Image (cartoon, rainbow, N blue to C red; front, side, top):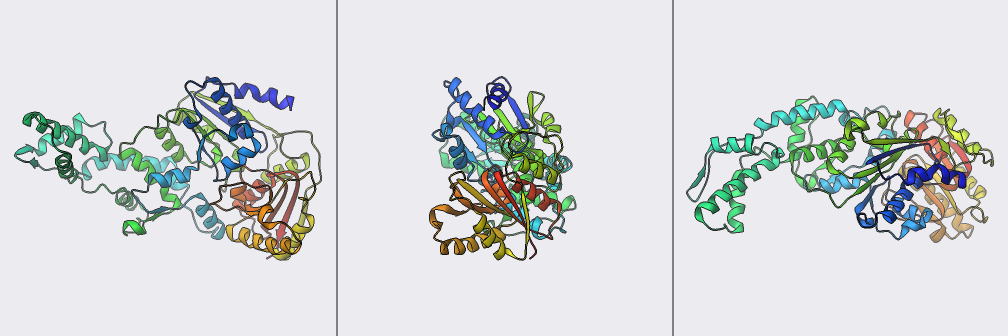
Length: 487
């Protein structure tokens, strides 16, 4: 413990760098370091930083509850925590009624591995450049200028154009005409020598807003897609609008480029976990939303994509050169047997392993899920004092739910306290329980368990599912069982 503390104290006490990026191997303690750094800052900068000034963008809904178990000293702090997908969904409620999240995208890629996903393409630098070119064209195409009259006061078309393109050119496009309207309202109030009533102001603003061909981000983005060779969005009413995951962040980017947004000055420190799962476009959006200090952490080997990406290559281009990079290549979580096995799965050769030995990794093949469930029940060691947590990690939601039902039936017959000690963790879960947890590989990210049973279809050797096996394996602290199912 003293060795770990000595290595990590320098990172925790670093308060100078505006943006700290921690690239750490699975089990290297990067999450613990980031959260202890927050605790340190809260303690040493009480006058300027409160827990309510901190936001954690976490991988899933149980993260905050989970860290309250492993870091009790932070459990009482009122630190905001949410996933970036939830944040995006809240921001787009005025545009669409619903959005897919990352988990929908993963599930679809597993079910249809041959079908091309446009998610990566639509969040690339090339796609951002296409949107930027389109935004320049919108300056003219989105407008239908004409005279605006109110009770004998007229703002001519040429005067509006002058204000729109020159005086208020720094305003976002869809907020610019409101500035022009307020300018006209000030003129009317000055000439009348009295303030206008709110309903009068609203009427004037409405007249100016009608000079836009459309202000609907959904329609603007759909037109952009069609003009650049992509399929447009369905023309449906607001209630039926649901964005595919591949379109969520492009639309959010357009919103922040086209509309004035309220500043988030109340957030003074942002923690971004699982940085390898964020696209270039998502980081561009974060840079526009938050101007505060950041702690960004992750492990590029634990990506949920078919191939790894090194975000350290483009982060300085987005956030500037004021980035302090820290590499943590020593793993403390797993035994040498588990870590070596996991590293072999991912082709990792440069990780330094902590000298702690345990049982060898068990590999077995089963005919079906029922036989797997019976084996898990026989091998489970939760009744022993040394193991408080265990997990069954599977590929998809349907497989996880099916396994949970099988275990519920078998364990129930054996007198196992199902209500208290068996839990199914899905995307809507908000609490983490000790005992046996059944979940998918993508929801297990960031968590760790004493004993792990990884269950995957033997035939599925796609790059994404090979990556899933690695993520599942690195969740195990002491004991790992890798099970393959024939059908």
